[in-house]
Image 1 (spheres, rainbow, N blue to C red):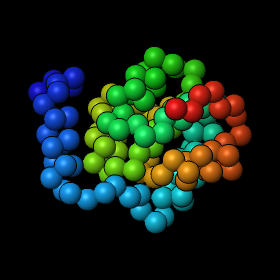
Image 2 (cartoon, one colour):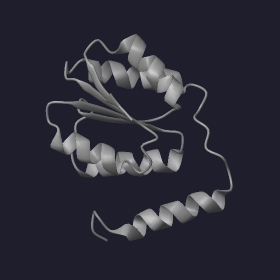
Image 3 (cartoon, rainbow, N blue to C red):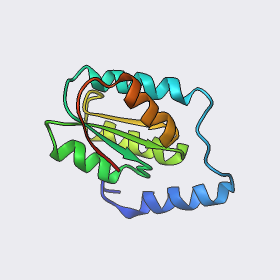
Image 4 (spheres, helix red, strand yellow):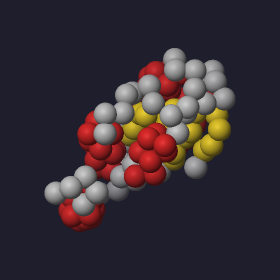
Length: 124
């Protein structure tokens, strides 16, 4: 398969549907989100927050095209977060530029408000 092949995405989507479970972030997700935001804060770059990132395609695109910004991508689905992290690793994106976290939107926004010292340019 190529990096942009739709077959792995389709398999992951079908697998997630077969699980028959709702997506809930883990109980300690706020700690993980705070750690991710503090890592991104060290870069001093403006932050883009992608809430409900899914497989991370838009987040990865933003992280690759916007070299002067950091991206925090969050989703409640563990399957989607695992896939997005694998793509980020495959594209050799450093953790100071892109972090993909398994948490709720509320936990991510609270962590950004509490931990991020630089400007936040976009939340979507």
